[in-house]
Image 1 (tube, rainbow, N blue to C red):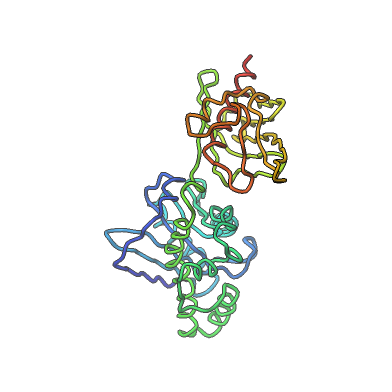
Image 2: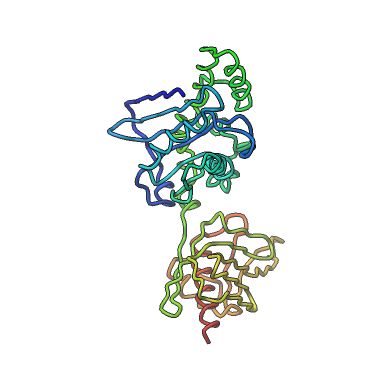
Length: 341
């Protein structure tokens, strides 16, 4: 086993988005290299991780000189990872973490990914792809978008082939290429977090609405990216805290429907859109607040005045997110009020 440690006199700057979605304490950025894609048949041969400590970025690499040393690098990782409570990866939810979990299990090493908060950058950036106007969400595509230029030019597949060659001839040149690939994956993953700064705060911000039910506070959360609008309806899927002792809620109203799965902590709602054609020939979309049984006053309070106090205009291409937020809150209130009657 080869252990490489690097200390860089620089800061690890985390964007506000990361603080918005997680109560951060000790953060570890993690990436692994394997002999293949199967967590059952292939092995972890290189683990890289990075954290911030004493005004420096610390980057460490654990390299198995032979696949038989997989257990050694896993045990070494375990010594360090215990100090952290939050992992940051790129596609780690689908690959790195399940792979590590299975390999720890294979070696009968007690470790659980469930003990950690986990931020998978890919999962969080995926809903914003259209906003970023990028062709795909490959890590190197994001690096190029952010102006990051690597020295390393090989792919993950190349790294596997290089490793197989290294096992045979122990070439120092091959070793340096493999380590550089992993080093830059980890080092630049810390820089790729900047991608969240390119997403407007109003778009990414989590919105929260609360309802009191039988002395229990229910929090409904969603972002504007969870909202879709077409020419017939507004559709929203969001999350809530889980309340296993409560039954699910289904509310069907003249102008909307809402479903809350209390056990899964998920909800969705659909709000009907009406339309009319103006003298100019243009079609506009609106919601009849009277049909929903919702007062116009809440909208006036945010500077939005419904036509004749009952028709709320909805721009389907560039909606007023604050008005939509108020509307969803009023619908949640109404659904629960009717359910308790």
